[in-house]
Image 1 (cartoon, rainbow, N blue to C red):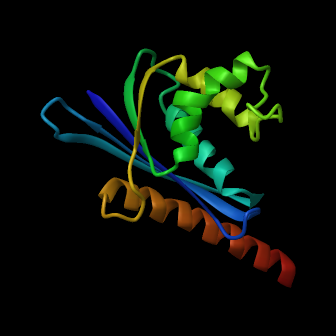
Image 2: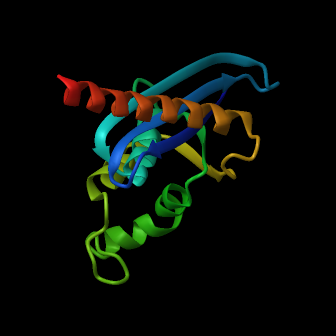
Length: 160
């Protein structure tokens, strides 16, 4: 079985209300889709990078009861892909400091993602956003839904 997770984040303002989206599918070795899961969430005050990281974490949380799963995570965020594949080991070696000696932004989320990644074999792939990749488009749609709900919640609370 092959698991593919498409992840995305959306934010109105940075920071501002945001959402994350996850389009998860399992396929057999012939490419036949066995299961599809669509998830999204919202945050009234966040950043786009936090939402991108949250989507990645949620993709792996959906595999918590299993170990040794092979998963491909497809993201249009270079921040997430490069962060996990290139920068993370350097940050850890530098006591969670960047090459400029500044604290790593979103350290708690990176630490959580790092912990979850260690339980599985994860392939990270970058896909160009808004370029017709159906999985990426679906993840974006879900992230926007979460963001729109966060915006609506803020408006509802303002009007009450």
